[in-house]
Amino acid sequence: MKIDAFIFCYNEEKMIRHTLNHYSKFCDKITIMDNFSNDETIAIITNEYQNINIISFETNNQCREDIQTNLKNTCWKDSKADYVIVCDMDELLYSDNLNLELKKLSKYKPSVCSIIGYEMFSKKFPEKYNKSIFEQVKNGVRNYRFDKTILFSPKYVKEINYDYGAHTCNPEFKNRFKKNHLIEFKLLHYKYLDRKAIIEKHKKYAYRLSELNIKQSWGIEYQDGENHINEKFKHAKKHAFKIIP
Image (cartoon, rainbow, N blue to C red; front, side, top):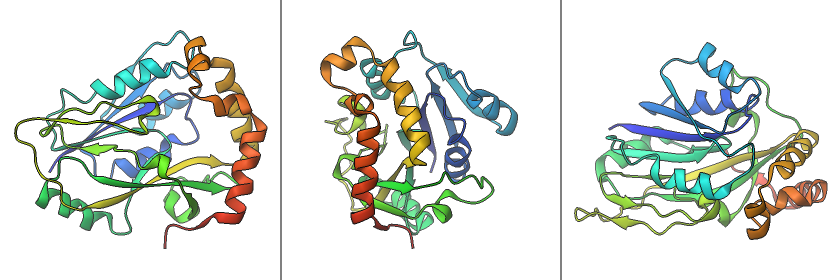
């Protein structure tokens, strides 16, 4: 069974090693969809990782959710793999027994997979890249908005039809539709790592919001700034629990 990953990226020099270390373990091909990062992201890929494909896409240095969503709906269409993963840099597919679930995937071949989403929290960024991020950040909060269909089969799915942020989709299937067998993965959203760093990151994202994004309230949390981050960590303090054994 072959899996191709398409990972969207903008200035992820801190996170990219964790993400590539994880997906490189079970993906046959990884393509970074890069929005012209201007930090060390690309240098890290080219210097430390082999056989990683990089495709750059232009948004005139703006956050353009319409462009990114269109790319998520189309970037995988030429893949000949059995399955594709379409995700952001901070979204990691996880299972307590990933190898077993991947074997089930190979055996039952569902068209799309059930994904249960969580937001992961840590006061400090996990800087040990020689150690799995799953060992360093284990606590999170259940969030249904991250039940995102990031894993599906291009052999059975004709159109994935993601909506804004890829939080929802409306797949269209080919004639050889394969009935889904219950194979459940977790999607761990490692966005809230290091409160101060996230606040600064959101300020930069807010500055890059396009007029369309602002009009549609896409990425409005970036405009909320520090209040949004503080509320997230306040909520996590009350409700976070150990997601990873």
